[in-house]
Image 1 (cartoon, rainbow, N blue to C red):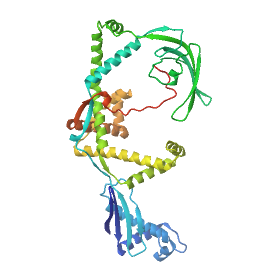
Image 2: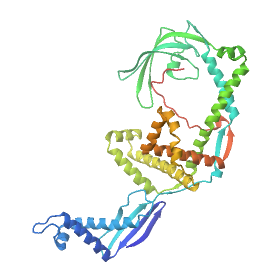
Image 3: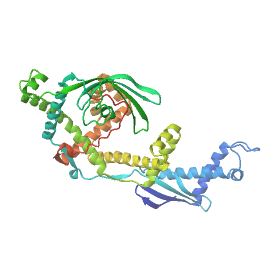
Length: 434
């Protein structure tokens, strides 16, 4: 058997395998024995049918079995390769002298990482965080201690209203005469706020709103009561109102600042770790062929198609365009593999290991998060491989992130300079208002 490299496309290597006549006859001999063992021919005992009859009566079966035998030789030759997709022939020639098979081998793609020393992470400036937290907390306390009084006139911004709300869609009632109180904040542009401005107690407001999912909801709001609100002045007296342990506003500020400082110190490590892993993945370069992505996407799409409902949901998400959906699946695999292999490569390059003891030590945290006993958490880690691997994966990312933090450059920035990538969608049930 002779192997030649026909083409190399990133992680995909195309090999040509050439078998001489003797190797082909040996493969055919094995194939004929399999056929003779499985078929029945009148006038002959099973397994005793002459070869020339088998060749004449079962030519296609002979080709298939011969190909399978030759492919077994190919797979044996490739067993040392790190292959991520099944290998099958893309070109076959069994008709001429000898045999020729061409196969595509999808190797594990290589990934190139930037040196950790070149990473630049942003750390939110602590003083800015503390200052903003104190001011926001004082405003929140003002809201909580606002003086509320019934009023006769129309609703205005910053009033507190009590309403009876009904929400329905397609004659189906989702919220039935629910009494709700909320403040008509000026920066809240929801119709449940804007439609009530200028209305009086006893009036009924009705409107419709269509959301991103295409559904239209009908709102019926009866105004039960309108209250004006007067916010207390932030002063020493206000501090005493919040808690009798404070004599001055400065004491209240210091207590809030201490609370903010403890939260910052607790959360900033997680923030930097998450950012480090994000930068690791984003700046890595995955050497992967489009052929591999297409194979993975095709396989996923065929699996989705086996579930009619799931397939229809996928098409709806991409305007009933299967090509768009296919490209989205490819992008998903690109990002997923990039993350997987970047983390694996960082693990290898830095000789990072996670021991069983370290994994089992997480049982206490898991028990607290899951609301179970520590012993139960340990039992789950021992007996559930999926949970064990999930915990191991998180520990790996923590260790890689900590290694990055040891070497990278960290810059203090204002909160508004950090992209949080937050996003949200409107929901019909999101009506309670604060």
